[in-house]
Length: 203
Image 1: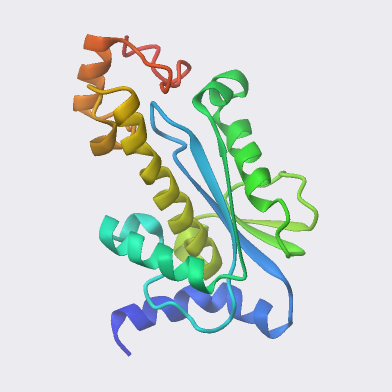
Image 2 (image 1 turned 30 degrees about the vertical axis):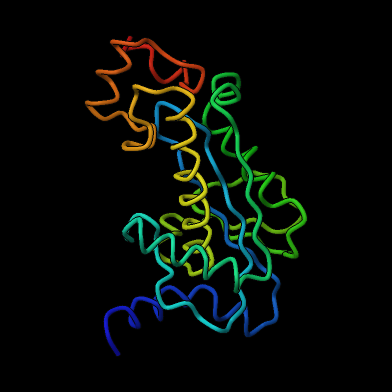
């Protein structure tokens, strides 16, 4: 067994007992809580016990090209994929945690699940049991799949923001607070995609 296969066996230790018991469950994760601009995006994914996708992993541990390939595999394989988001304006209005919860509720709408495995977040009020798992994207196959869907979905939005608001480099840094981004923010001022509640000490 190679390292990739060993990693997959570790990831399914959370999922396998649930599959064996016939429990309908979904994995949930988000992308984009930390950036200074753009939406926070959540995904809710119901994965079948087979075929297992070898490269499903915490999205942060995969290259962009690998994430794109696995994203396509997930969409072809999953029983259900739901995506929800909360805009920068919504984040500013109610704070990032509550906006993330809203995005997750939207992603989970209609999911055929009675149990939701969620990366670190609880208290969503979903129609089923919620189980928060710290570092779930590194410990649970279904949450890892959701992390990839959320990350790829959000990353694909950033070139469009770059086109709408040129000069900030959104395609490169995805809205995160890099030196390039902060320099552009100070030079150009904020655009409508920026989270005003996040950038106060930069401008």
